Length: 211
Image (tube, rainbow, N blue to C red; front, side):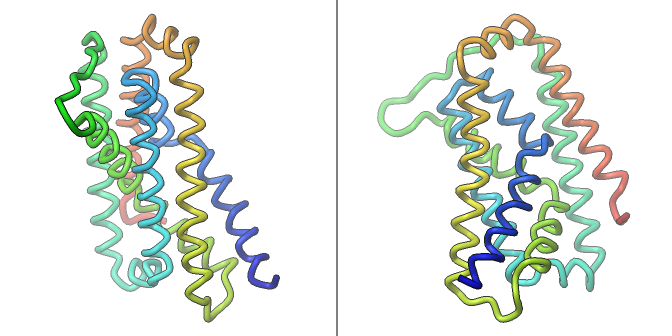
């Protein structure tokens, strides 16, 4: 019973951070409206795996590494910011391009699902500040000497939290109304999404090394 209380605190803190709009939300919403539900759900799984990665790194002491080696954190910030700028640029440049239905090869899943999964994972991992947030939340709520079952429970919890939220965003944004609205305003919506991505990436890169 005592071990459940830290998990409840972590769940509440991570839920607030997860539902706060950021690069991951922008990417999932656009993928759901542009590519459809299967691709966006694959990307949501990538988001979940990204959250698991941050969780494992936090449990292994990533925050201590970032503090002791600031250059590592600086490198992560620059690389992550550069990736978001690159992704935003691609979205902006493709704003006027019509949507093409993806072709499914014979046998196996469409390659677009793999690309969407990797895109979701890369977008989630592009923000190193999220790793520090995970570490800070765990340091705040977890008692010293956390057991392996609690660590496993945290990994499962984070995966379900991240994947469930972005799957919900997918279901909403891939429904008929939002999708038709996206198709009608694709050029300007893509430019807005691309601009947000570039701005977030630029902010991350410019603030590299800062608090």
